[in-house]
Length: 243
Image 1: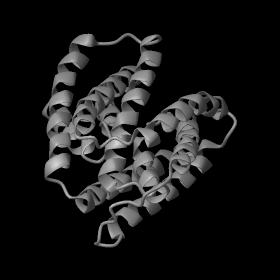
Image 2 (image 1 turned 90 degrees about the horizontal axis):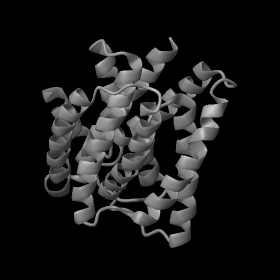
Image 3 (image 1 turned 45 degrees about the horizontal axis):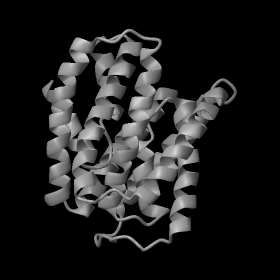
Image 4 (image 1 turned 135 degrees about the vertical axis):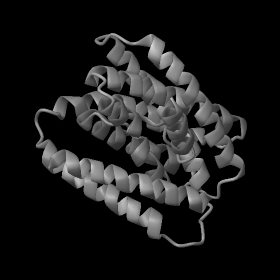
């Protein structure tokens, strides 16, 4: 349980709920894969919801970015899932690892001066976030992974969103994607409610602290550095998957 608390605390500061680490952790603890995935999605959603409450109260969520992305990603995910059996996943996963690795380097080796974002018009936000949603939804459906790890750098570098806004908006989006995936899984897999409800308390508490630290204490450049390290770990995880 302390591990769940710490994971939720750290990852909610950079726009993730924790699913990137929860599922592998539960599998290492000898959970059945289906149970690990469903529990991971639920805790991911709880952590994201906890953090989203803080970010919403502090007016850090950009709904013009979030809503088109939520809608288009939910439409594209089933299409990606249908292509899973038709594409060489090793090739696609390798390309994905390269993209994530390059994004990590940009986060870690970028300029010391932090850009606070560039004002972007309504239609560019709507069309741009919609296009990102289509891409993220398709990739998520194809590979069975969450989209939060891709949303933050795309919002920062494509739509020029400030770092903290990108992280807060990503968390808001992750709430929907996590609970949507969880609902899909519980229709097919029995759930250990006793475990996940207890774990959810730790996840919620960790996310509360992590989000409050991001609002008041953590500088945007530090968020980018933390996120860059997480992206590196994710890239290596993808590489290991294809070896």
